[in-house]
Length: 468
Ligand SMILES: CC(=O)SCCNC(=O)CCNC(=O)[C@H](O)C(C)(C)COP(=O)(O)OP(=O)(O)OC[C@H]1O[C@@H](n2cnc3c(N)ncnc32)[C@H](O)[C@@H]1OP(=O)(O)O
Ligand SMILES: O=C([O-])CC(=O)C(=O)O
Image (cartoon, rainbow, N blue to C red; front, side, top):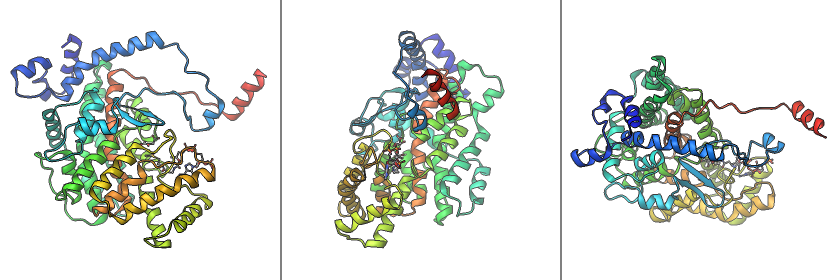
């Protein structure tokens, strides 16, 4: 390990110093596999060089013109951010560190007897760009279980929330409150050097992810009256524990669904509202808890993560109005009535994608395997055959195809998780993986405060008047 990597590792918290020696030595003399933090410490110096080189070679090159419509149009297509965990192609969909969803399903470690990837492995991939071993993933599960308890005062905050407060608001409150024990906030107050930011950011990020199941489980049980929260079992993986906290731990298919769900919702490059918000707030050196709570508030919007709730509400309303086995004609009429009412068809369209979202396809394949005869699944399939043509005929949406949110709720409903107001919380548990991975790298690479330039309409008019 390079000397600089060793000093970076020395900045980590004391319990990890014991294992602060090179990966090669670890694998030959110790039965313990290389930990994620150790591997990260090895990768950082090379990546610092890589970024330096990229900037030296390309730093002054242009991506092309920025047009005024992009300022008014939600910055679509504006190259503006660095995000390493994943890249979104408009036609193909997401790749996590270069790997498609089917490739991740094939390559990432699975639970014994399971066939879906463990999200622990996906996190390792997002952080390092590498596929972890089964052993490394098992260690990560154990590490997260060991960090999973939430402070008593956070439990009390949740217990005092009225059940009428939306689960996403409760989620964001609790994550904000975790900032009380932030290693990064403390280290900053203690005068940590910029070069060492990544260490406590890593610790906070691991704590954040580890504590989300207990927060999500508590919200679910409080709001929907599901009884007392069981304890985390350190011998189980993250998804199995989350399923147990929600009361579905005995259902192997549900646990597998959660593994898939948490894997595919984790990251969608950097420009989406939740990821960008997390990065933006993190750039002010707000700690990962504050940054992620902000991200959750963005995820809670109906055009973003809340769309999974909206899809189920829309489907239920449709069934209420036209019955469960409605004809294509009746469904079409219902879709048109939504559009004519000035509303969006939830779960369809996308700011970047121009084809069916591969996350939708992965969930459809799961449904075909596990619940092919489910009535709601059939309705989702029926809608898939009708909505795109209608959106094309309506002539506005640039992408008439379904996104991830068109499918997720139907799967959860099938297993009895019918409380749709809770669905975005599960999305939020998963999205923490992608945001946390980037926060760690942002602090490791010294990413600066974000501060783009804004203009008033008067200024725009003046600039171009002067140029005429
Ligand atoms: C995890 C996720 O965040 S995935 C997205 C989840 N959100 C949804 O499913 C909500 C429904 N979909 C939408 O509202 C949009 O497609 C978005 C927000 C996802 C993307 O928005 P944009 O990039 O602005 O889409 P686009 O450029 O195609 O929009 C052009 C017009 O088509 C409309 N449009 C886009 N999608 C839809 C839709 N599903 N139903 C009806 N109209 C739509 C837009 O509202 C916009 O109308 P306007 O010109 O009157 O403002
Ligand atoms: O990419 C986007 O804008 C929205 C999305 O699908 C996600 O964040 O998962």
